[in-house]
Structure formats: C-alpha cells, structure tokens
Amino acid sequence: MKIGIGLPNQVRNVRPETIPRWAAKAEEAGFSTLGTIGRYAYPGVSDTVTLAAAAGATSTIGLLSHVLLAPTWPAPLLAKELAGIDGVSGHRLTLGLGVGRRPDDFPVEGRGVQGRGKRMDHDLEIYRRIWRGEPVGDGTNPAVPAGTREIPLLFGGFSPTALARMAREGAGYIAASGPVSLVGPSIEAAKRAWKHAGRTGNPKIVVIGYFALGNEDQGRAQVKDYYSFQGEEGATQMAAGVSGSPEALKQTIHSYADVGIDEFILVATTDDIDEIARAAESVL
Image 1: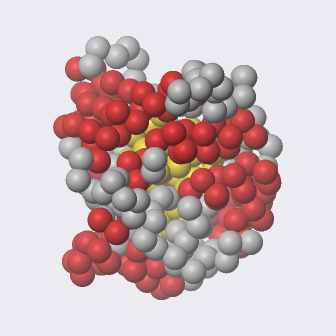
Image 2: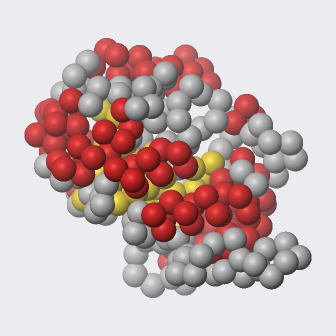
C-alpha cells in the first residue's frame, strides 16, 4: 500500500506560499502522492492552482485531486486547465472527481447544484474530446498541444449512480475519510459495481484520512469547521476521526492495509510544514 499526503489547500486561511514548499518537502520525504481537496465556498486555494504549484515545485511525486467538484466548472475550461497541469508535471496527474452537494460551491450561472450528475456525465465526454486534440467550437484549432493525454480518472461518491459512473468511466474509486467499519462497505460496493460493469481486474482504491500530529486540538477544530455544513453531530464525528498521534495514525493505516486498498492519503489539517516530517517518521 502506498502512502501519500495531502496539500493543505483547504485549511482555513492557509498561507498560500506554504503550498509549493510543502510539495517539495513531501516529495523529499518519500510520499507517493500529493493530494488536494476541492471546494469553492471556503477560504482556501483551488485544486487547479494548488496542483499547478505542486507540479512546478516537484519532479517525481504523483498528483491527485481527492476530489475536485467538476460540475461547478465550465467543462472546456476545466479540461484545458487540467491538461496543462498534467503536461507541465510530466504526466503525473490523476484526476479524482466528485459531483459535490453544497449550493454555495456552485457559483457559476447555469451550473448550479441541480442536475450536476447528468452534467458530469456530459462533461466527461467534453474532457476527452479536448484531451484528444479535437477542434474546439466552430474553429479548426484544438485547445491543447500535441502530446496531451487522456488523464486517468478516479471517482468519489456513495450513490448507485456515482458508483456506476466510476465503474463505467474511471480507473478506480476514492473513498471518504473514516474508520474501516464505516468506509469499508463503500469500498466493497465500488468493487461490486466494477464487476457488474464487466470490468476486468480490480479498481484502484484510494482512501483519505485526516491527521494532526503537531497540534491535535487545532487539527480537530479545523476539520470540524470544514464540515460544519453537516451540522454539529456530523462535524463532531468527522473531527473525532482525526489521527492525533503517531500510534493512532499507524493503527488507522494498518486497518486499511487489511482491506487491500492501493493508496492511503494523509490529509493535512494545518499548514504547519513540520507535519510532513512528523508523518513521514510515523508511517514511512
């Protein structure tokens, strides 16, 4: 099982200049992947900007959005943005997508929360046409340079529709943060959807988990704040899932190793760059 680490792009009032430094140190420490969390209505840095900064600051580590809220974007613009990030990184990007659900994360007129699932299904074909270099609009020019590839796709979500989309369109599944007892059933559902779609082999399975080794109370408060839209009970439950010690972090990762996942992404809850070394010492 590979171990990646998230960039702190959705820590409230993150210091943006920390992001490229974080990326470089995570690569130096030996993590497999740098991840980003996507959301608009929160005082952080967007996935695309964060991934581009990480691409420029590194040379070998993987890049993953877990997950980017694709239906909030006009599809042609997002497809070009992502192709550029993948290109400048040397094709290190894996795109994790989700449909989202908070109305305030959908600020673009005509691209609201209603119909977002159907819109994603339509947008996926637009992405691929653009990445294949087909002409855009009524003109003859493609939007991307020659050599652009179709970026590998992973999908998050819990509904039968989301899992069917993953099995039909993707290379694998991104599970939510939480204990195995809660997340394990969604992983098994993803595997069943994969087989039901007639796919061979197994989907790539990525799990994310929050950690706070330098300041546990601060980390839990950040997670509770981020999930406050779920109400007091839901936000408190998410905060309780933060691994606040090396022992807790090891235990969480080991519990998922028994499930047979491919990669576990440690999600930062502060922008304290020393968290990278703490996490690396604990689990690498």
